[in-house]
Image 1 (tube, each protein chain N blue to C red):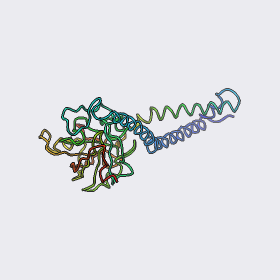
Image 2 (cartoon, one colour):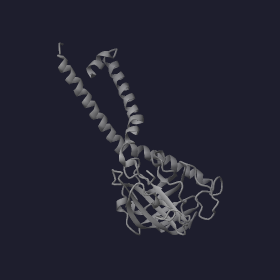
Image 3 (tube, each protein chain N blue to C red):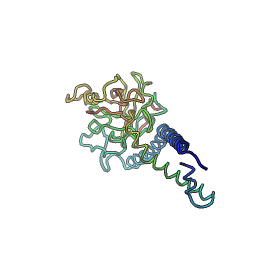
Image 4 (cartoon, one colour):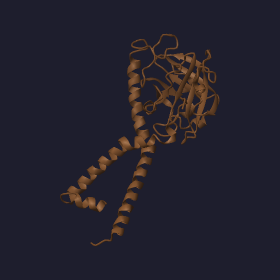
Length: 230
Length: 53
């Protein structure tokens, strides 16, 4: 077994390269499969938490997401407090939990709500962000949305139906898009708006894809869900 | 590299295979638990929010 040092070196190099190749393939599998599977499990856990909270009713604990009471408390960071349904995106946004916060751990558990923005149904701008690739990718088909599409948000006490009005592709630093009056930070809001944000292009981060919508209807619970869900 | 690892592991063949399986499981757990979540943070498509940059 007298192999030359060169042969040994080439053999080791080959094994290292094959190993690195396998690791890269595993990383691809992690991104395309693993993150979505674990996001699905995390969303299920959030939905359990929402269900427990809602079973206690809108007044016990913090009265979150109520359209009527201005003094209603806000959900804690990382807490699920709403569910979103988008008929056009029925495969990816259908009962998806909305959690408070837009950090990576928040976004791995559902759609994230920008904490400084309005709660669903309120005057102002209910702004959310979600992944478009990996980690559940709720907004992966955001390019299929059209003006007039409906977005339904379910809270402990109401169904809010928003109608999409406009979209834009903006720079990542354009924080005015989630202002209470989009594009006019500091202005006093009078309308009840929703804003969706995600990355654009899908596998990139050079821009953000924004959709705006306006509240088109409110249906109290327990009552039938809005027609858009049937 | 792997041939050397095979020689270093003690015991009969069955025991060596068992050790390799356990070793692979530990490596996979480290990759999926720490290395990949760390590595993906440098990928662009996790940035979905507007912020001050």
